[in-house]
Length: 216
Ligand code: 3NM
Image (cartoon, rainbow, N blue to C red):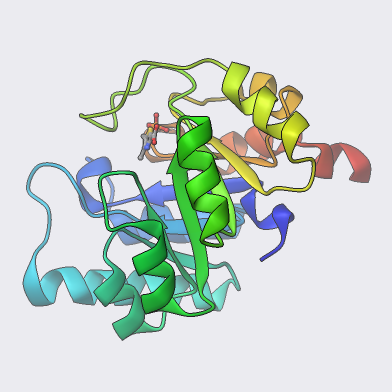
């Protein structure tokens, strides 16, 4: 994968979208320029069984149309079954080594919060790491306390070439701080799911990245 893919990483499941249809939100986000998508069906009243699988497949189909990598959160079996572009795991999920074995050369993203977790992720070939929650988030019930940008900054200095995405409470008002701290990109749920103008939100979020600054 390219570091550029992380620039604006949208994460969504049915429980994150209250008023509109989830697939409409995803399509609008794809049209507006998200660079990666994570299917994360967690939280209250989530889909199960065939409905869960069908919804994942519909999300994947849309991502393929827009040439945006489709990443599955946690569910390695589903990712392999659908031929997803990758898997993202947290520290509560299967060990990094086991996931790498199961998914072969697919993209592997790992959430890390400490040096020890970072070293394990790198040892087993994580393609990118997620660092957060940077700010308070209401989208993940078991999120750790907000960490700020200190660890992110440290990891960037330590590994200048490592693909890093920041997550947790990021929005149009604060996203600039994580790009400044060295993130390649931002991962967001509510900033897009709760936006009244997805296209405008996405162009604002992307404008803080050095990738867009180079073009201007
Ligand atoms: N993981 P929002 S924070 C899925 O810290 C997730 O690992 C986090 O949602 C972590 O953009 C988070 O609405 C939720 O804050 C991010």
